[in-house]
Amino acid sequence: MLALDALWWAIGMRIVRNAPLRLVIILFMAVQVAAVLNELLGWLGIKIVDPVHIPTALLVTICMWHYFGLTVLTGFAVLFAGAKLVRRRREKKMAAQKLAIPAPADPITRRAFLGACAVLAPPFFTFGLTGIALGQICRFRVRRFTLSIPSLPRDLDGLTIVNVSDIHVGQWTHGQVLRDIVNTTNSLRGDLVVLTGDLINFELADLPEALSLVKAMPGRYGTWMVEGNHDLLENPLVFERTVKASGIPLLLDESEVATIRGYPVQLFGLRWMDLIGSRLDQVTKLQLRAVLARRQPDAFPILLAHHPHTFDAAVAAGLPLTLTGHTHGGQLMLDKHMGVGPILFRYWSGLYQRGNSRLIVSNGVGNTFPLRINAPAEIVHLTLRCA
Image (cartoon, rainbow, N blue to C red; front, side, top):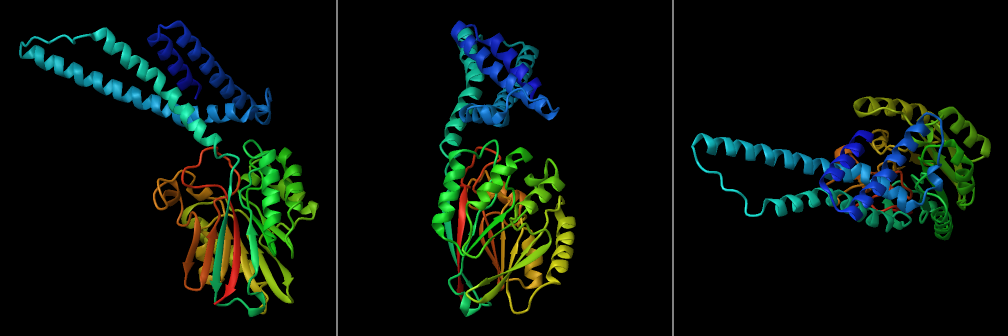
């Protein structure tokens, strides 16, 4: 990142001769370089400026520049190099044929125009994406589903579940949006509130606030949670031990039973496994087989997991309902079926059904990356009905 920042800075200063514009480039790039250095020092355990204390607009601009602005710059560089190569080959061919090479009508003006485009396009692109991201980073929707489940006991008809997934308390999700999440969840008055992973974004320092958040939105019959990959990035053992000590039910390849309207509902929760592909599928089957050994035959089962690919094992086990998160709805989607989601996941957003088994994948209510395209943040509200 630092190398690309330095490259763009050098190119910009070489091309642009206008003093005010050069000053803008200097200020813009100084902020970007300082941000990268601050992040690198943070990884080394040296905190200069805590990202939480940096204005969100500035943080988003820095993120958009390094993930997308520099990409545009690289694209311009490749196009420029390609055009230059084509021009040189054409000139050699014309020289070999002893043809006069016509001079451009106004080379200085054209060069200045192309230089200005090359320098200004990446920052303008960055600022445009920043505006889009800021317009949505603190917003989320309530997405409602009514599921007809053949095996649902009649006594549980109308059971409501609120799934609050991927909150990512930390750098991008803090302050007022956390209070809005609590208020919205409580207003839904769910019989059950479940959290399907990624309670915190990264740092365990955010865990006390996150646990207070969970306690502030109790379900009528209880609240349960499972862990996600972000929860375990800093120290898995400390995360699990701290959550368990708080009294919040954290299901780690475990199950608990809630009695709702006199009928038992058994919730199964799986640990996060940092695996991919067929290896993840194999281990998930073993996890689920072990935890289902404690299944109560008279209870209605609900499976909680972070990774949506758990659904395949749930279908094989005949479980009627699986709730997951992790995908952020694909994060960057062209439409419902094209984008990052289907590239990385078999199931990435909303309702999936195979036989009598249902899966709900939440887009998540928080952010670990500030830009979403056609994958809005959400709290999921489910109403279960007898078939």
